[in-house]
Length: 227
Image 1: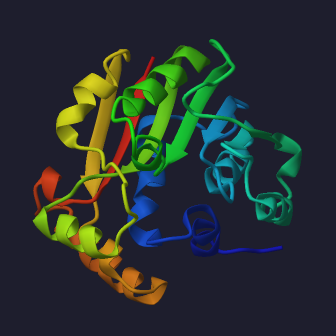
Image 2: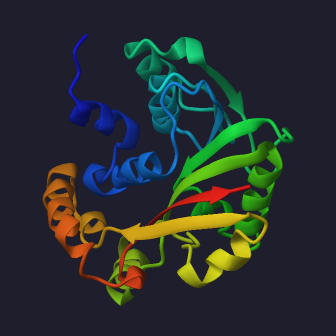
């Protein structure tokens, strides 16, 4: 089966693909992953997109969500013939039952929901990941930022109720356990598209805007934190 890179990105990212897939590029620039046969963990996997990405790089992945990944995750992984590298479990990101085990832990857009009722859950998740990583292990994350006044206004009207958006000012506290953290913010218009076709058009514009707008104006934070 021959599948284009753009089609694989759609399977991995699923929503506002142009913007969120920039996380994959950032991680590749900062962490050598392919062919390393790392032990990896995806939290909040849902359809297991990041598990697919890591397994396609010949790594071993524990694919998890609080009640277990969606059933379709197994079908997507089998489609790309990488299911032999992936196991599936239910796992609470605030209570990870591993210690100094994983080379890589990754998540995409989970902190806002987990911390909806308790802001300190952001740090709780970061600290649980720290515990689960081997010394020198890395957390690869992509998370929704609070964004600018326009994002805030639109989210109040159309967004997920109670979502606790990450703020750049929180990073030093949330990731205080880690030896280092490198990050950048991306995306401005993409989240405003009503369908993926519109988000794709906006995402192309965002590729230009990312070089112009200040960090705080954008709505996605991507990063690498090192234990």
